[in-house]
Length: 324
Image (tube, rainbow, N blue to C red; front, side, top):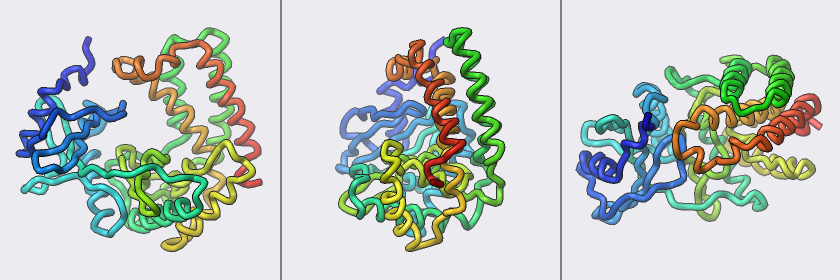
């Protein structure tokens, strides 16, 4: 059976955009995106746009609309983010044949440099402003972070993939149970959660000089504030991370207190992300884009490496570097 995105032909993309009375000057070209399909084009007025076609059956319209409304709220409060374009009826989520899609003004720029203190300060300042607004109310439709149940769900996805040998399966189950026992100790209450970007890695922060904008809120969720901070801290420099964190903290505290009490969640959140990311790849393997982009997932050596990485992560859960 063909994948739903196989229907997303260049002609369909063009027709969907033109259905909004926006006229591309040339054929849109695809950007690196796997969960959704994201393309860039220039209209006949010379404006650059991003068009995002959402993965069918992943999110309901209500969930997507809540993301759009959150982005508009941020922009209205002068938080540097990119809200989707709305038509004359005020609609930001559009439908064409089997697809839901949205248009965003193109945001040019480059990722911040972690060895530049001014960039770190600026990123902290942006996140502080984001959280100052996002903490004012809660999402009603977007998901909430649930590490313990999420890890068990991910485990089931991996164990049904039939890629692991009997030995790997046993080792994987054992290490997941170790992680799960640790995550139970760090489960986050609803009262500790705010609306978060959810996937705030360097690739989703773009700018020039010391002005940065947050992009791609596709995974925005209710989570502790530290979820939007920990991915910006380097894992390959355990001795120097405090210098990075100090700069981010100073920028963050221009707007609101830094969530120091959530530092103990960094390694649990990292463990959760490692496990969920691999399970996500497994669950998307029927999409032809995934075997092409991640061929190593089907290699036995990858699973040996993944299990070793999780074993190392268990050591970090026992003795987190962030609290040393």
